[in-house]
Image 1 (spheres, helix red, strand yellow):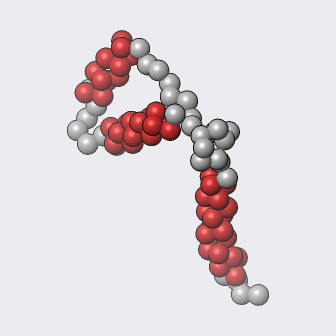
Image 2 (cartoon, helix red, strand yellow):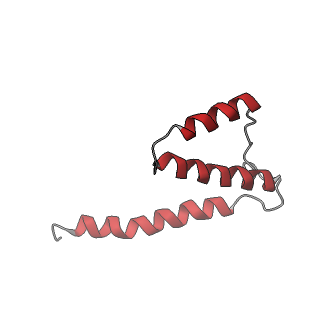
Length: 83
């Protein structure tokens, strides 16, 4: 066995793991009644939203967390549409 054989096995295992992970997502029913089909959307009060907006405004220009929050907003909209 070559010394780098383990690296090759890991390289082949990664797509397999990804396929298994994605196929597990496909097991959820499309009718919306499957377990975990629609994640709950946490409700935030108006005061919490105002405070969060002020904190985001205080972040430095180009902060990565702002992009992450935008992604989170998209996921929240998708979860709402799922219901």
